[in-house]
Image (cartoon, rainbow, N blue to C red; front, side, top):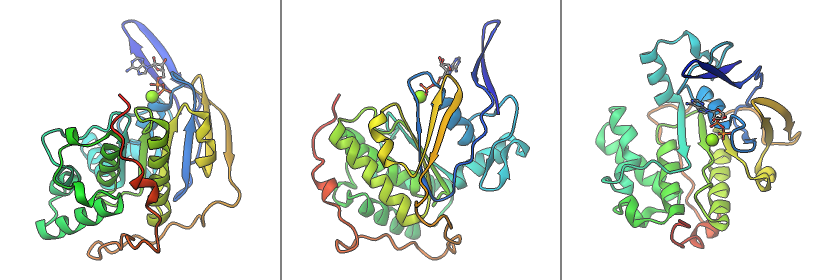
Length: 260
Ligand code: ADP
Ligand code: MG
């Protein structure tokens, strides 16, 4: 797969000959210095952009074969996004931000409110449901963004440098939360970073440099690679909130305001 950007008359090649598989239900870290092409690659995998040449296959679908409208629907149904700058809607509460994709999906109010409650609970923000983003710390905002990314039960969550605007302790809590979500819900997670300290968070590590893949390291004994069968849409997922099942202490510690 290849991707260039055109600037004035010049074509700048950014990704060159990328050929890589993201394993379903694994936690993949895409590591590379700034400018190496991480965002470009994630935008292609996330169907936010199209390659110049080559194929992008997501959940068995060759996304090149979809029209722009079909692609938008496919993306909404299958892919959740977490961004470096959180991208929450400032005038909506935490609850409404998480609810928003479900409103767009036309889910019936009672059901969607039930699901939003469970999601906020799962990210440790049940008591912050009525707060707007401006009233939340950076780490809390990112947790709202994670809950929102999971709202439509995507097959894949893409997080582009989700810890870049957080201090290291808060960032570590966010990674731990994403890891927990990935394992609990058997969702594929791809998370980009330029921080090599995050290598240990990965099942699979893809190192990108100057638009080419420098190395791929896959953990041999990762989680069982078998993704769970698609949940019957009428059956609500059981978000584990039981303290015996989940240790949320790492979230409670994270109460400091945004690093900047
Ligand atoms: P990373 O996320 O690893 O920092 P990016 O994918 O954002 O890298 O960028 C890779 C390269 O592509 C950089 O050299 C960047 O300047 C260039 N680039 C990114 N987006 C655009 C764009 N829209 N137009 C032109 N060049 C771009
Ligand atoms: Mg980037």
